[in-house]
Image (cartoon, rainbow, N blue to C red; front, top):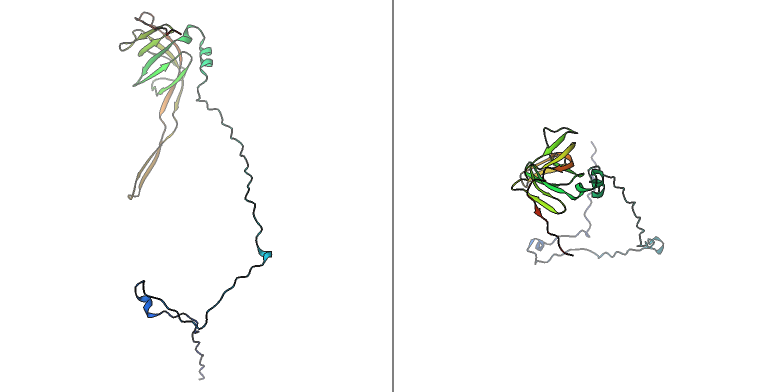
Length: 209
């Protein structure tokens, strides 16, 4: 059987050889053995040079987005008062307590309260926990409530508040929770304030001009 021998190719003497001192601390020197130094030269022609780029950039103005009217945005006060009927009702307001919160109410305006469970849409309700009634020249201050005073309202809507995000996170525990919540509410339209006339009133002092 004929056997073939392959010639061995030796490494060129140009291959850098690490000196034994390279394994010493950083202050030790490192030497390379090379037969001849290599010189490199980079040539670039003027034709291949990139053309200069103008730094001025035209900024295009984006058209302003149209904001749709939200149905929950209150109407102007003047419009609400005109709808309720101008006159004596336009100069009166009251402070009424619903649940654990107090609200300033005026005829013709609407308020959002916490959900009234037993009320349906278009139901007429009477709020009798009135803390204060004020007119143009008199103030009826309750102790704690104004006797026989009542605020008349109509239920317009049973809705939900805007969503609130609840996010819980614990670092280094791989724990996070995300949930949303919408609080139920009720929209009331105030139609009138009555029954306060017989309660003792305090005069409102007029500030001289």
